[in-house]
View 1: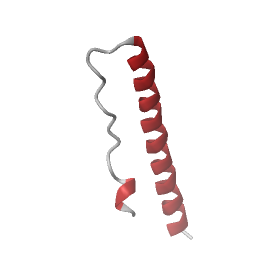
View 2: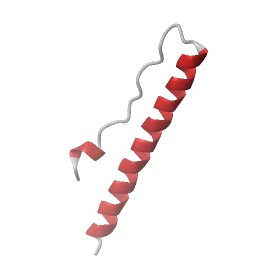
View 3: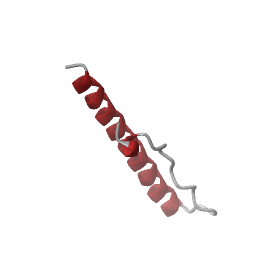
View 4: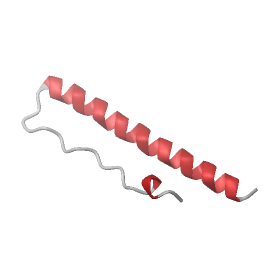
Length: 53
């Protein structure tokens, strides 16, 4: 299993104070972190499925 797929997905801390514009950028950042974690999980599933063949 590639080690990079097992790294915890940690978002950056939100800016303080947070403006409305900062909130939009932070939400975009959080969505990117979720997408990356989901891609890692998909890669793990694919590795696990290929090991069973």
